[in-house]
Image 1 (spheres, one colour):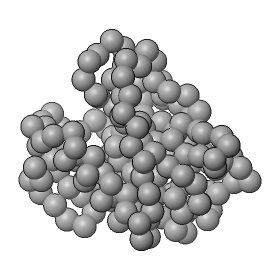
Image 2: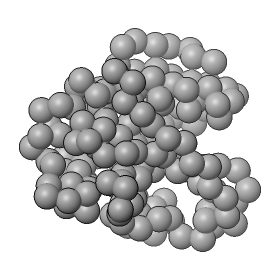
Image 3: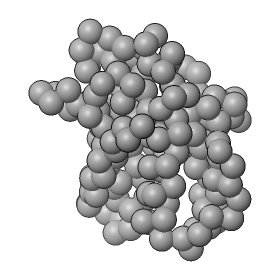
Length: 171
């Protein structure tokens, strides 16, 4: 259930279902597409790998990480992530930004919602972009145990379950 909303930021109660959260993420991606057209042109490389690396490097250099408040899931559009870049955003905000950039670059995009390190509940999300021949996972989120970035062209350690959700440009 949405507790606060605007065109750029929405907050979801932790008691909200995963499906509710994913629907709001999808809405934020759609809003973010027009917000990222110029930046996508700047970051597009000669291949999906190069484009993914450029997106990853841009986000780790310019948008800080910060876990949301306990009990509240804050979901930002790309424009709101830019506004909050110094205070920080978390994994779904990075995913929204990456998805919008990659859709503007003409790539197929999906999110992978995962549980890892033996956990049974979904706890993390990241984007995967594809040109149809190569898939590139992009995850600028720091690992809360090791404090290293989860990475570019890698996935989190010891994944126990994954849900894949396609994100399509419907504009």
